[in-house]
Amino acid sequence: MTFIESRTSSCAVISGLVAALALGCGGTSVSDGAGGSAGSSSGGAAGTGTAGSGGQSAACPAAPPADGSACTQTSSDSGIQPQLAQCSWGDDPRSECRTSALCQASRTWAVTAPVASCSTPSLPAACPALATDANGQCSDATLSCYYGDGTHCACSGCKGGTEFPICQPIDPPAWACHAPAMGCPASLPQAGAACSVEGQACGPSCVLAITCENGVWTWRRGQCPICAAPDTPIATPSGDVPISELRPGDLVFSVNAGGTVVVPLLRVGKTPVFAHRVVRVELDSGAVLKISPGHPTADGRQFGELVAGAPLDPLHTVKRAELVPYEFDATYDILPASDTGSYFAAGAQIGSTLSR
Image 1: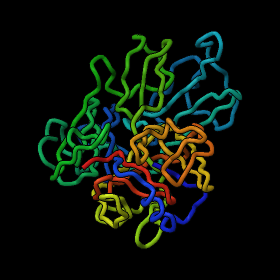
Image 2: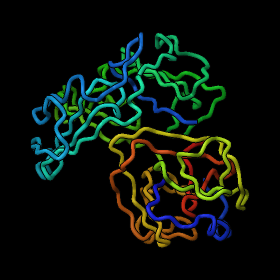
Image 3: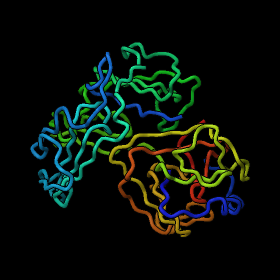
């Protein structure tokens, strides 16, 4: 899944690419996180990310610091490199709706504010009153509900409520509920807060890993095969269209039975991300892609495996590849109705993490 910094005309190179390819390659959803304590059975307030308890380690201040202000680091983790202080504040059960901060090697705080979508409540009025009532079929596949006991229920078009490692589509959608792992607190542990069981894992999903390390809770990006930035240009019969604007049924270019075809989209996926990193891939064509490491190439490799000199597809070679921070709060993917499930971003053919 990709973010294109410099665009090339994708439609102009598709025919040549398909001719060189060997055959074969490969609704908005909500990640299946366990919740926290902000939502209640009677309704959840929108999260501000500034209320509630903050990180409790010595390196975490009681309230969010100013971005760029001075900070100190915790004790050495390995004796070679210092362990950077990482903290979060707020009581919203959604990690992306809490304020977070990292004490960088420059000894300054890098602060991340809650995303814009946090203005919506964590327990919308359309949710069932109790988590136990969220069972069977449902109609609104965008509905996500967080309850006071830490249970998170989502109306999902994917079996089990998750698209990872692949979505197993169901129609109509159905409720999928997930409670915190045994021994984990109902409220999502704060980054930097004290913990007592070394190695205990209490992350809500593969999107965010939360682990007890050296006596404090540490937040790290998960290993989900998540996808593209919202403005990734996708080849369609009407020209390039940002991936975030595509909907099921829209027409895109794909490869089917060895030929270039125009097909409708079967699925569109959107995944919230926290502290995500992507592979910045510079191609010999001049295009620059920012792609999640676990995302598949058209021939089944992963973008995290790409190095300088490696082919991306028969018409594109990697000039440079490096892991960089991701600047958006969600990633996107699409699934064309073709036997490869692949699509074209800035003229390069890539795979999809979604499955029919």
